[in-house]
Every structure is written in C-alpha cells, then in structure tokens.
Amino acid sequence: MRNIITAILIALALSATVMASSSNTGRSAYSFLKVGVSAKSQALAGAYVGLADDISCLYSNPGGLTAAIYDLNQPTDYYYEEDIDIGPKKIVPKTNRFLATYTNYLLDFQTGYLAYVRTLSDKSSLGVSIQYQDYGSFDRLDSTGQNLGTFGAIDMALGLTYSERLTESFSVGITGKFIFEKIDSSSSDAMAVDLGWLLRFDEGRTSLGWALRNLGSQLKGHTKSHKDPLPLLFDFGISHSLRGMPLTVNADITTPIDNNIYFSIGGQFEAFQPFFIRLGWSSQGLDYKTGSDKDRLGGFAGGFGYHLQDYNIDYSYSSFADIGNVHRISLGYDF
Image 1 (cartoon, rainbow, N blue to C red):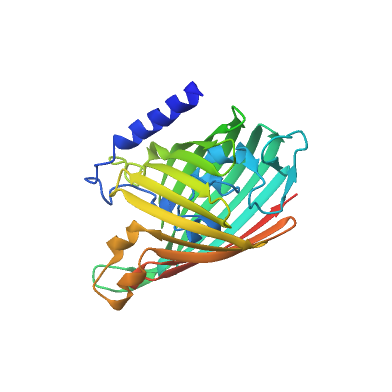
Image 2 (cartoon, rainbow, N blue to C red):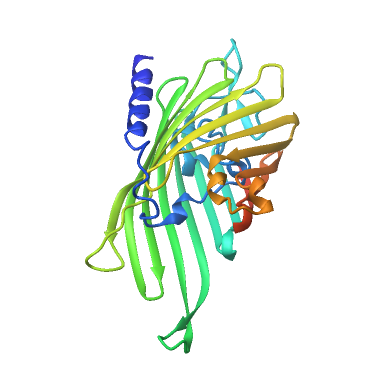
C-alpha cells in the first residue's frame, strides 16, 4: 500500500509541474491525438481516466486494462471468478476484446479508432490500436488564385500496450506509439509513450486513475530545421458508484502542456441495464463561447450504451457551441 500511495503522490506532483503553463497554446503537433476515441468516454465529456473499464482505456489510461473489476452495475460481457467469497465478486474480461469507433468530427474530418486486446492472464493484457484522422481533399491554389488541383492530409498513430495488475487493486500500463502525419507530399513522424495506473478500492465502488499521454518527440518534422513538441498532457480522475443508486459519477482534471487546465464530470445511469444513459460536461466548453445562443450547450455531452452478451454498442453527442457538433459510434465484441 505504501508503494501505491507513493505512486499517487508522484503522479500528482508531475501533474502540478505543468498546471499553470499555457504559454505553449496551439504550438504542439498532432492535435488529432487529443480527439477522444470512444463514444462511451465522450458521452461522459471525457471524464473517464478514473473509470477506464473498457478497452478504450488503451487511449485514455492503459492501466485500466487489467484492473480488478467488480460486479457492481457492470455490463454482462465478462465472466466471473468463483474463488472470491467475501465482498463483491471480481470479474475478469474475456480473452479477446475488439473495439471500432467512427467519428464525424468538426469540419467533416473523418476520425476512426480500432483496438484489439488479448488477455494474457488474470494479471496481464496486451493490446494494439490504430487511431487516424482524414482531413479530406483541399483545393491547391497558386499565388494568383488559379486552381492547380487538389491535395489531402492524414494523421495516424499506431499503439502497442502492455498492462499488468501489480496487486489485487492496483494496475499499471504503458503504450508505445508511432505517429505519422502527411500533408500533400510533406510528412512528419514521431515516437511517444503513454503511462497510466488505476487503483480500485476493496469495495469496488470507488477508483482513482492517472495517465500521462504523448510523452515523446518528433523524429522528423515537416522541415529539416524545425520540430514541433507533442501534445503532452496529465490526467487525474476519480470514479464512484453511489450506494443504493444506479449511478456512477466520474470527474477528471486534465493538464495539457499546450493549453489551460480543464475539468470534466460525467454520470452513467444504470437503472435500465443492459441499456445505459450517459451525460457529461467539460469546462473546455467555456473556450467555445462566441456570444451566440448556442453558448449554453458548449461542453455538454450525452449518449447511451447497449450491452448484449458479447456485443456492445455506444453512441455519443458532443457540443462545441457555434463550432459544431460531433457524433460518435463505437462497436465492441468480446470473445
């Protein structure tokens, strides 16, 4: 337990080192890495690092892959261990898990995420993932405005994740990522790692999570003389399932190195299982205000999930006020 407390304190200290920094706003590369990949997490407005209970935690908190899970308002797509006689029974994810997400992002950018996780044992898992964003086609114009055809742009990140449960309630994970970007004939690439841990308390109702994402550097920039920093961020979250109520509440505090700190809160209503209703709000919505009637919706999100045996479907809606709205759909299969 002493080692767990030490890990928590170190994580909070690291987060605090960049908490007041916003001088690098807009200066990092690969902004697509900050676009949420899961309909479930985004329906909670991104308040997910402390919950991390499906394989989209490959993106948000790799420590969640092997965390001890308990039978409190959980989906049905898990099998139960029979050797726990006291307290909530722990349940372990099935051997193979697959997730696919499609997002029609702002400005009609097409974003997708594919992930596969193999459970190696009751204490370790291995996962692979692909995140991409296609910016579509753009007109190529010369200095006089003459149309010279079109060009495209695409971003992609390939990830390999390993997660291990160190104690009954504490798990850690690490993801190595190769990042690639191409704009017309120009390209850049980078290497990065994500780190995360998840602590679930013995009664199974409360969990704490921490993640560091996009720690790395460019290997090759778009020009020989310049390399951009990556969108490094620290995320700390808590999740709590209310006693006597079918509701799980999540809250995150996120510290990006290239923007201001922001907060997210979300709730999952579980009274109608296997149907789940989700709502959330992020303080990032305050940055979207333009003085229009849509300002009041900025930062709000919502959605639902349906879990039937080995299949999962999740949908989310996120409001960016006047900038637009984002719809996501995720499909999962466990076997």
